Structures are given as structure tokens and as C-alpha cells.
Length: 315
Image (cartoon, helix red, strand yellow):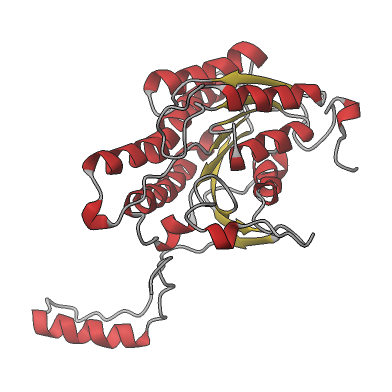
């Protein structure tokens, strides 16, 4: 069966009947995700604060979310907006309440909201550190916690959900990125959160995965302007955010049954399953090392180990 078209009211599709909440859905990846879910039959809660790329208030808040929801409805889908700050307990709780109050259920949560405040480590202020960790890491944790509490209650009431959570990390979280210590730390933290959530919540019918996308957004089009630029010759636009959304939609559907605790890198037409930390070369003395002995052993092990991938932006 082909992808639903606006003329059939999105009544069919991979996510028909499901309710999906997407944070940061006013622009970029979030917008692409919201539209892709709607095109596959989902009813969508479109969350966005309408802030600037660095998280500071825009001249008119809420506009982007309204535009995306209107676009979905104009094409025959169903959508509602949510303008709360999901990095606060009240805002996160109201996101889940909006889905339940409007549609009577929540099936999928896509944590996507974020902004950047890039600076070299020695110049990074505590406020810039806190702000980025707050929106990315706390902004993942709180919606996930409130959604999980709802789904756990459903499971305990004899209504086990087929719930899905898709978190958004980054290559910066996997490898690091020069000038983005706060962003890299937050995105790495999201990977750890994903693994723990998948392990804890599986018993309630909740699957939790993460993506590490490379795409053109307000956060990347200036930092990596040359790499992210759209082609002008009509060739495939590898950095279009819409390229990432098909995997996100699949992960958010019941078709992804059994897939949890995984991290997928996505870029253009490429999907990669990322394999995290695992033991490499090992030496065991069976007793305590001296510092000199430990150093000699470490040097020997490093000679056997694979060369690590370089940090983004490293010369």
C-alpha cells in the first residue's frame, strides 16, 4: 500500500489511530517528523515554544507550532498545538495532558526540542552550560517520565500499551564536537537515558530508542553551513530533515515491535545501527598495579586498540 495522500484524510497508514507528541515540532526535524507522522495516519500534538536558535524568546511565540498544525489539518489530518516548556515539570505534564485531553490517548513521544549556545570550553559560561543541558537533557527526561507514568498506569490497569519513545541525540553526543562541550555532553546524556529507560520500561510495553541525525536545521545550517547547504543542481538533498523522519515514524509505530534500547545514526539515505562502548584489549595482573606498571600496561593495550573516531571539528 502506498503512502496516504491528503485526499484520503490520512485514514490509513503505518500509524493510523495512534497519537504522537513531538517536541520542538515547529521547524526543522520536528516539523518534518510531525508531518510524516500525520501522513501515516497519526494524530499529532505539535509542541514548540517558537524561540530563536539559541533559545531566547522570539518576537512572536507559538507561531511555528500553529503553522505546522494548520498544515496538517489543511491536508486532512488531525493536530493540536502545545506551547508549554517541556523542560519544566508543569510543561512536560501538560504535554501529556494535552494528548490525553484532546485525543484520549498517547502512543508515541518524540523528544526533539533543543537549541545551541556554542562556545569554546574555556569561554563557556555556566549559564550557557546549564541552558543547553536543561533544554536537551531535562527536556528529554521530563516528558519521558510523565509519559512513562501514564503508560505504566495503563499497564497496571490491564491495558498494556504499545508505546514508543524516540529520543534525539547527535553525532556530537557519540563523538564530541569542538566548540560544543555543553551540547555534546547533553546529547551523550540522552544516550544513557535511552538505555536506562529501555531497560526499566520494557515490562510495561514501552520501547525507547534514540536517533543521531545529520540534517539541515537552524542549529546546523550556520555551524556547518557548507556541509548543510541544499544542492542547486536538482540532485538528492542529503541534508533535508525529511530524510530522517521515515525511520522515526517506523520506530514510533507498532511495526517496530521488539526494537528497543538502540541508537540509529541517520543521514540522507543512510541508516546505521550504532554500537556503543564495549570491552577492547584488556590486561589483568590479578593484583594491584604500581603507577609505572599501570602506565606500561595502558601503553601496550592502546597499541592493540582501534583508533577512535575523531571529534567533529578536530584538526
